[in-house]
Image (cartoon, rainbow, N blue to C red; front, side, top):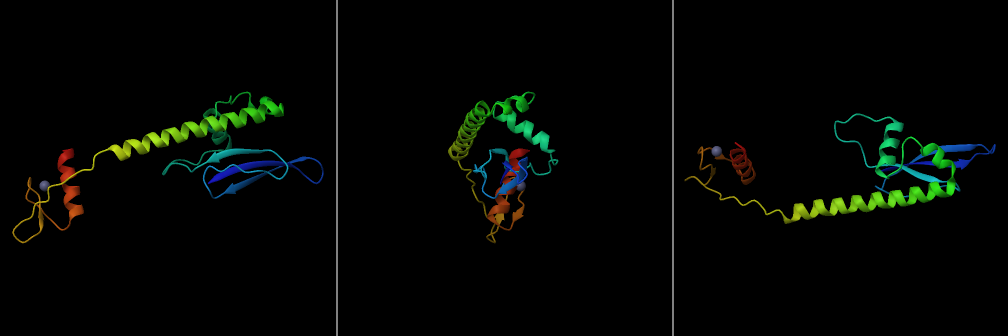
Amino acid sequence: MARVVETFPGADGKERRALRTFPERGCAAQGRGGCVFIITCGKRKPGGQYLRYKDVLKRHLTSCGMSCDTWESDALMRLEWRKAVKTGTARFEDAQIKELEAKRKARKTRPKVSYNYTYNTSGQFQCNICSRTLKNKFGFASHVRAHARN
Ligand SMILES: [Zn+2]
């Protein structure tokens, strides 16, 4: 899910802001005649704390290679700011894609674990080490992994 802060001119001519959420992950959105800046993509870590708006903003600014201290003054120069946002997010997305591809490659090249299933006389799974009887293959595999950890 992506959350986007959209700025647009209001009816009285003053600048208005709206927070919009998009269900698809990592999307870029076009605003209603105003500028669009992607604040966050993804979700918090399980069990993690809810972050404040400015903490999420800081995290995403640093991930895009922008300064957290000077972003407000930088944003006043619209053309440079828009270029910086575009290049920063593109660089961030490229790095994220490369990281995910490397992670996937590492996962896919890892050899599959093979188990030698052993059975007792009544046809149930039985551990070679402690001769415990197990009900199914998954339980057997989990049990063997537990032995390997110890
Ligand atoms: Zn065992």
